[in-house]
Image: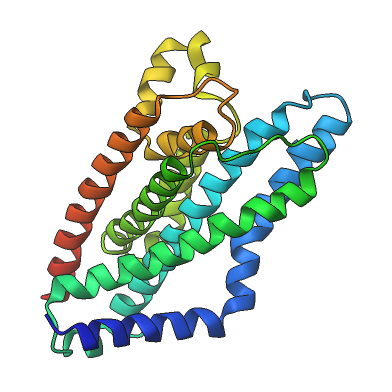
Length: 256
């Protein structure tokens, strides 16, 4: 393993991210903050939502921001490099195993997802205050869950970016991302689905459910949530599954 080459490619991706900082900031934070303002500020101030809804909404918004950022940061460059710019051909000539090229992409996506999640917390808190009761009761559990969420988003981006053609990008958002968000317990508690028992069990195949519930368990534990050990095990399972699928698809595309 040539670590010098690995970190050089990671540094290059970091440089590209810094160069596109304004664009990345807008696409990462604009939509989540609009949701926070409309649902958490306007709806609550108008009396359509209880004040406590702010504390339910914020962890879900963090989970959405991290998931969208990680998927976008990995999937879109891969689609472009494999099908438009063909830049991936230069990377494949590097003295490094093909699998490590994919892992570098995952780590770069994880770092962007972590930055997005940690930045959304204070920004959303400023928009929603006063009345937000958010606290990190267990810093260790929070750190583990937020890293696992970042890994899930980046590995998901790897799997999608290597599986979808450029003409199907719209399909990826319409058939994968949008349903995942709306059935990911981001705007409501998983416990709220108890009136729909079949749906409540069906959404458990959605990894975003565990991301949202994990954020609530660590930031707003006063509300019902899935047990932290269940969240950690489920996220770990999806991380490994998506990484294996993504690596297989990446190697398949790299040799064709």
